[in-house]
Structure formats: C-alpha cells, structure tokens
Length: 190
Image 1: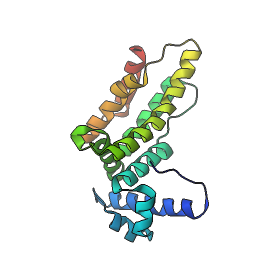
Image 2: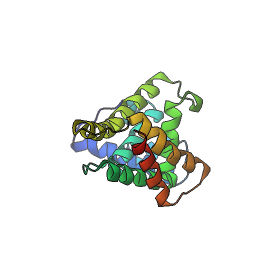
Image 3: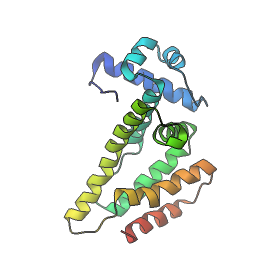
Image 4: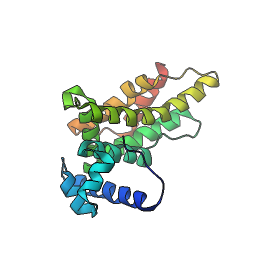
C-alpha cells in the first residue's frame, strides 16, 4: 500500500496520477494501463511503478481516496442521520460511471471471484478497507459508550451497503426513501 507524504512534488504527482485515472474511468476505460495513466498525467511510468507497484494498487488508492473524500462516514453524533447521509453519498457515487468503475476495481481486488488472488493487491485492498471501516466503527463505538446498542460494522455492510452495490450492479435505482428503510432495518435489528 502506498504511503503518502504531505505536500510538494509528491502531492502534485499523486494528484495528477489520481486525476488521470478518474478521467480515464469517466471516459469508459474500465482497465486503464500504466502507460495510459502516464500519458494522461504527464508522470513517467517508472514513477508510477515505483510509487504504486502495479496498476491495481494505483486504482485501489484512487478508489479509497475517492470514497474517503467524497463519501466519508459523517460524524454528526446522530447515528441514524449519519448512516442515512453516508448511504445517500455511496448510492450517488456508484451511479456515476467513474464511481462504479472504482467500485468494480475494489471488488475485483478483494474478491476471489473477481480475481482477487494477487496477494500484494489483496493486501493493499485489505489495508485500505480497514481504514474505511474504522470510520464507521468509531461512530458505532460512541453509541455503545453512551449506553446504546449499535449494530456491528458487518451488519451495517450487510443490511445497508450490500443492497446499494447490488442495485448498482443491476442498474436499479430505488427511491431515496428505500435507503431510510435499509438504515432503519440495520438499527432495529442491532
């Protein structure tokens, strides 16, 4: 998993490469190559390989960065509202060509059915997903510390997140009110 140093040339390089990957996905390129990313970003291929090692690790870095920046887990202190806002953000993101392409890349890297047998890429995906789930876990821990009985992260993923992704795969866009039903179901069965 690539570590990020703040500021300077490293930050500019990372931003240029990330923007190139996102543009390629937005244009319908499902499997961009390092060469395409290099040409689009103006960053030499060797730099991309040195930084990310392989295209799959780069795509994971872009996917998780996008998730954390565009759909971070909210932190208002109201778990229901936070889950609902998060579900809306995730549902909106996977409706876009770019967001769905990044979802597919993440799924392929983490699922044995999607080809996720490459150990370094799977390890990168696990590390990225651990950071992502930690956001949700902190919110659930606060509810538990206040005497509440929150659901587990796995339960939230099963009841809220899985239907969002499944619907995206089949192109079914439920009304926003159905997201509230999913959130309420997750909270009620905790």
